[in-house]
Length: 235
Image 1 (tube, rainbow, N blue to C red):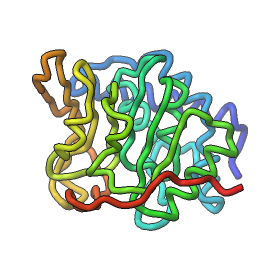
Image 2: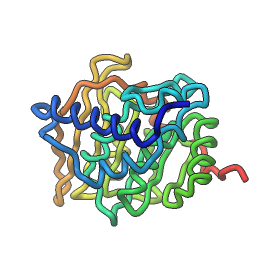
Image 3: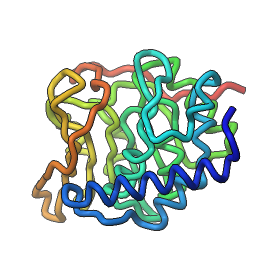
Image 4: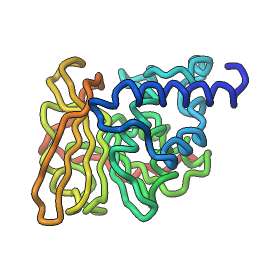
């Protein structure tokens, strides 16, 4: 599968630290919060990649997970987790569950994670995987991420793992005053995207800044289409 697990994890964490240092002028971060790095250490990435790619689980790169989707590069997972400024009492919305890896990292940092996935099979697999791993504070729903998950709003933070030309208005509306939303924003292709941090102050005023060029799969789903529901993990 891969070599010594602990050594592979530490090597990956060193690479993440190196990426953080090399992008500090763009992100404004010379290092990530110790809590975030500890969560990256604690969540075994090989549990979230296809069996045939487990040998590459601790490479600092995105990997395919089927259905034309990917598990994000660990550096990006760590950076986005840090940028959303998670606190132990927070409730976070994630748009784009994918394999469940980002949600598992966030679950170690906050009180509750609600995560949406538009691909039914990926939603089912993520829910089952998180359940088997004992991650009890993540709820997965099959649904259109552009609409968010209003039943549990407002959220302390929202993290979007697929790119759209603009941040969907429904997500901004579901962000709590004082909250932070992190999302890749750009055209319909895989290129010309920036990781954007949007903040809503206590008065509801929005501010945003682009922090890093990125490449994400496109955010799918229509703005006026409601679908899906909670995903029961397989028994």
